[in-house]
Length: 250
Image (cartoon, rainbow, N blue to C red):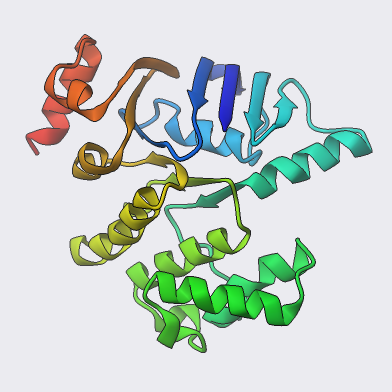
């Protein structure tokens, strides 16, 4: 489902991603861990083309984008659009449209971007709101919701685009523990249903429980990767051991 080869990204001459390779099967849940500034979020943003890689290639669901330049031709822009449709993304901040209701937030993408009929989009949105436990909030506005509820709406909005892959960039970092658990429950459900997911998180218990594979980033590189029982119980890399010792003893 996902193939990344030799991905490189720099900002102002500073290398943030140093030749990342990553392959992921359909239905696999991968959790990215590592210290702040190690390139995890940049990696996700490159996958969804919010950032353009300087080199390397990204393939999601059979659509390939090569780094080195922004899409120029009509054909390249179409490939960019197709890849973005395949990868839904949920951010640290909820990024909901404050002037739209919950229902309108979820239906706007399918209608505007995919050309879905409004009635079909509404039926899809109401089903997804029920899935995240917010069917009774359809007529509310974002500011009338808690942070956990807003993040669940953001997940429903991303799912409404019917992506092949869901990307989560620290989706619980702005939430207090009780609201965080609301969001993690929805993410666990998606993983159990076989959604292909990449999750950047500091939630080590989620990584232990739900990841098929844990990838440790360090200095813009994949320092270690493996099943959670290996990474948490017997990490092979000194940096992985040091990081896990710090985050699990807080």
